[in-house]
Length: 119
Image 1: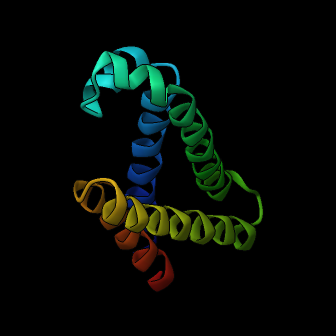
Image 2 (image 1 turned 30 degrees about the vertical axis):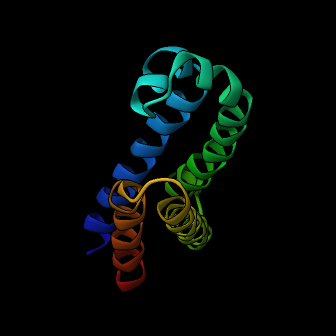
């Protein structure tokens, strides 16, 4: 069960690394297309997206600390915190921005969180 929890958590971490890249360094190219924004609208929302990418980077950091911390209890606490934050952010995004966020972000985080708590 622990290995499965770690695998799914790793998938959540990788999804968020990709999201960070889309919202920051790749926003003008790939990010704009993924989010379905016109060039004009992208120019307006670029600063906010970059800021959002920074926050998603903090979620990546929490999950990475969960994997890398020498003390398993501290690592687990970071993992649970990171996954809970991803799930809440995904719920908010799913209800306020786009429903597919619930499948892309929330569902994997909730599955990983359930597996982590059960392990």
